[in-house]
Image 1 (tube, rainbow, N blue to C red):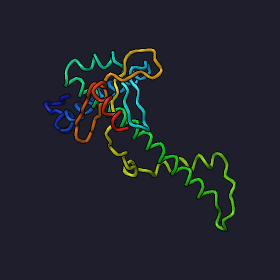
Image 2 (image 1 turned 120 degrees about the horizontal axis):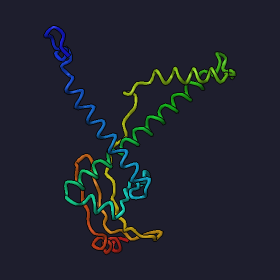
Image 3 (image 1 turned 135 degrees about the vertical axis):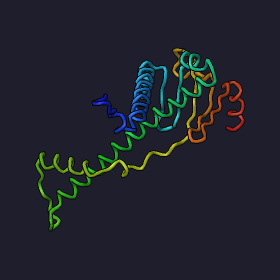
Length: 189
């Protein structure tokens, strides 16, 4: 916008940087939405406890058109799972801190129990939530995870087509046909 020959874009030198960042965030949101839809359709599953990614064969075939596509897909899945881990850690921190604040407020000066109304509890929780900064959260540890490509079958426990792992910190991935790995698994038992 120019007024009398003066461009206001000069006042905001970070405009291009901001616009690029907004585009990146929109792309990430779109990617996460697609991954949520794939998970809802049963094409993709994430086991949080065992850190295992299960990908159905039809989706894997589409994503493996090139090695770069597959690498990008797995990296995007990692970002999606890391986002969920951060959200869970944030929610757990908030709940812990809010409950601790309410507990402290419910104990009087002489260590007697003080009855708090629902409004008091809500006010205490909101006040504690406002005090917590993003920096108070220790981010979840970045850990490698296993990848299992499963056939598109009706079996309850289908035999994997391929297995592997992905190390996000080193950005390394290995994937091998399960038939090659199965004899090694039997030897180690």
